[in-house]
Image: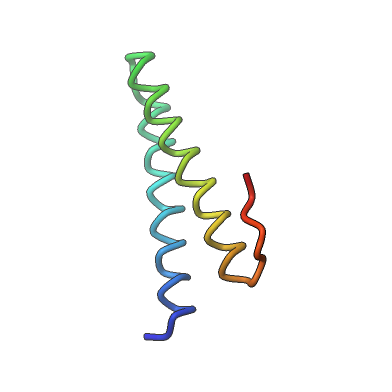
Length: 63
């Protein structure tokens, strides 16, 4: 497996997990749990954008 395939696979996993967390947050009845799930989903989405940018050769990570 090439490095780009490995990165692409990691990105798909991160984005998939973020979507799962968003769905779980929508179903959560406890406001604190909902917020925790949303925060984790946003963190994963942000991290996937950063990894994607770095993999494409962008030397300045997004913040």
